[in-house]
Amino acid sequence: MKVSANIFRVAALIATSLALASTAFAQYSVVTVTDGGTISGTVKWTGAKPQPVTLPITKNPDICAPNGQKTRDLERIIIASDGSVENAVVYLKGISKGKAMDLPEVRRSLDQKNCRYIPHIMLVPKGDNLTMVSQDPILHNIHMTGVELYNIPFPIPNHPVKRPFPRPGETDLKCDAGHVWMNSVALTVDNPYYAVTDEHGNFKLTDVPAGTYTIEAWHESWHVARQESVMDVDAHQMVTRPIFADGLTWDKSVTVPAKGNVSVDFQISEK
View (cartoon, rainbow, N blue to C red):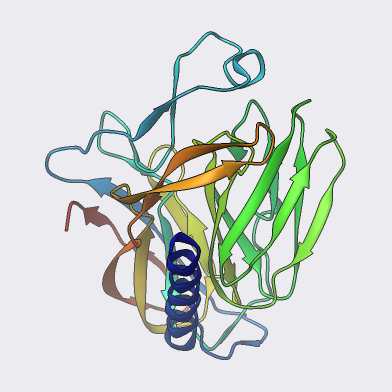
């Protein structure tokens, strides 16, 4: 029954991601943008702050907890003292034409260091490869579910592995080697008008063709939907890890004048 439930969950996740792709990812054409504008702003939290999701470090503490920490923040929601929200994704919904792909390289690859996925949020251009590597001298495993389905072991450090990401949508990454706190999300996108907020909640979209758009802020969920029992492929024993609810979105309308600068600020909270 557990196997069947997992199969149905993966199928549902793929269907959801493909449905989102069909609406949020319009056919995109690269054109010369000579009079583009800039959209910049912040994502801030309003209301009572949720508690961060943490798990005990139960395996390989010499590598996973070099500073002696006992728990690890899963980074599902990071809110600064001034309310700034890190790792929100802000993008133009359904944009059909604009500049060529220029997403930052730091968001297009994944490192595994001290049993942590770096970065936590990735933006992979549709059709490109995601390059993955591990610096840790222990076994890691990247198990992907969503629009991409891969299960990749990393028994040797500093050996890069590449996999193609041909379909737009969301892919969740987890470790099957007992490090149940390791998690991240890769968003496969077909246009460059995406940004991930920094530690101050700031984002910027440049060279935007003049026009009116829907701008959306997306944030992965910090709510645990259920617990999942999986086999630790390294220790050959069952472990439990959290499965999170679907991500949340907030929409606004924005009009960008030719060569203009527009400010858009999001106030997000529990829904």
